[in-house]
Length: 301
Image (tube, rainbow, N blue to C red):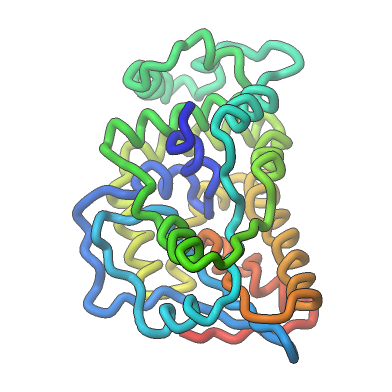
């Protein structure tokens, strides 16, 4: 499995499959004045900008305005969700974490009866060996199925916001860090109860049929910096599963808030923290959790 195959899977925001499966579809044009949301938290010697990203965009999509460019230029370092490293090591990690201690039913039997025909067609189009998928935990099989679906739609992650930011910071040797390791990120999914893993897989099947509409709604909300719409459009499948919501949003956001507070306390200078936009919207957002820790978070735009 290549780095391009794995990296989009490992940089998720809310609405995982809708975001990943429709990331770079051509068609939507940026609004006349795209203004993605930006926040700021600071103390006497440290300023941290919080920027909600879209993990991939249509080719040529113009999203950087003057306010964002100024913040990006001021930052001494970039912090993203996770840094994707050696693809072979990541593939080995995925299969190690995703292999159950005891065998599970065939993957098709883990899908509701009414959706099995549709799911069987998705698996067939993927070209992945059914026997291999059957041997994996439900979440891992779902992850492997995302990439072929993206490729089938001509989707890549090269236009993603993180990729553009990383290139800009690397160009003048500014350091890039992460909020969680790949193993930590996959661990949140791996720790899900089987019922939640099946909800995770089922949401993937549902999203596969209306990706273009989902993508358009999320992109429009992100481009205009609409927090309420971002929370609504990025969080559909999580709202239906408390287990998913806790594991993929609440726990991660709490961990990130602790990391950001620690950097505020210990790292002088200006830092840009760029994470999936869904993590910066709604009642369980990173900003809300920072304020619960006594910090003042101000929206810049």
